[in-house]
Image 1 (cartoon, helix red, strand yellow):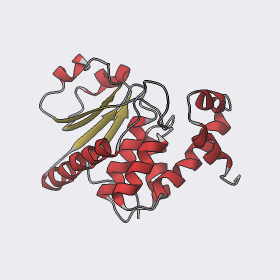
Image 2 (spheres, one colour):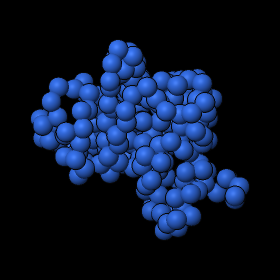
Image 3 (cartoon, helix red, strand yellow):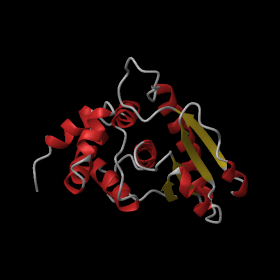
Length: 197
């Protein structure tokens, strides 16, 4: 089954939000760091449903003051997604998901929303679709793990993300050290377990 949901999709970073104000966005998932101000550009979007989630782009609990995503936030995301699917069935719907760079938190959250809308879609197809939309994607592993648990997908989304990590590291090997230093060793390890093509 193709991983094309019944709604239009956009994904971006904060700096790109202004490019989407005329795109007919009907639903926004806004993922921000806990202390980040709400982007003022949303005032130019017209009427839209919006879910704001606040967590840092980390995948582990740790001794720092950074806040990882929680199961409750994923539950809130999926509840928002159920409303999106209902509205998409009644007419045109356009989902915009953003985080700070449009790379990690947003792409992982988008994967969960597509997986929920298309429960029979293969996890690899879902992640491949996101990579086509957002070539720089590096989905946050913790968001995927929490989503797999909530959706009963038996870690298939998290496992599928390993291929994306491997592909990104093949293009930009320097990312490995950046991810390690950011506490994301498990993602780098997952990439190493993917057999070469």
